Image (cartoon, rainbow, N blue to C red; front, side):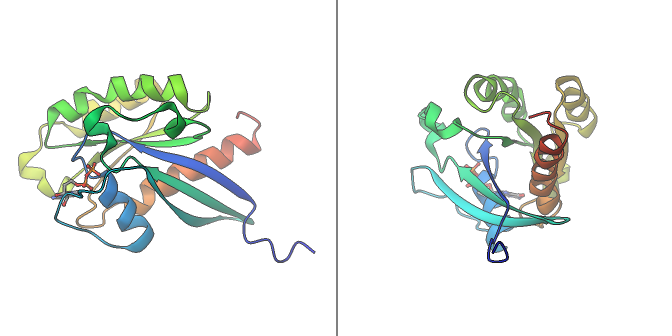
Amino acid sequence: MGSDVAYNFIFKVVLVGESGVGKSNLLSRFTENKFTLDSRTTIGVEFSTQTIQLGQASIRAQIWDTAGLERYRAITSAYYRGAVGALLVYDITKKPTYESVERWLSELYDHAHPRVVVILVGNKTDLESNRSVTSEEAKHYAEKKGLLFVETSALESTNVEVAFNNVVSEIYRRLGSKEV
Ligand code: GDP
């Protein structure tokens, strides 16, 4: 008995952030190693699952993507309900997407698990010459707010696994130390 258990934990993780920052591509890069140049047209919540091994524990991350709903401010509290992790994504070349991070953070704190682990993700580092948000300011903001922080490129596949794995291992660490 027990040897047929495929995983020990399921964590719900949500992707949030403005439209066009690369949420869907981060997810498809992580779960299927795929990237698409077109913005997606499908509307509606979707999720993918990925199993992450942390020492002896197999963790199944159920990762939810807004799939465009944020464009219409149509994300409901059901999207956040029970989420223990979040990737809060902005585009390093688009300052307004960084400026709205604060608003996304308060949505998360209003509706997700009270101890939700948030990683601030600055995506599109392959477009360095168009950068409008410095790493330093974002890192400083993340530290001030108690968030994890990473910069990624879904296009070049830089730090994508790091982003998802860091959030999942931090949730697991807090669970072990009974902080959740
Ligand atoms: P979402 O609306 O946040 O889910 O964003 P999408 O994943 O649909 O991406 C929006 C657009 O940005 C698409 O045209 C993607 O091809 C592009 N994109 C996403 N990630 C990156 C990246 O890391 N680098 C570059 N250059 N483009 C990206």
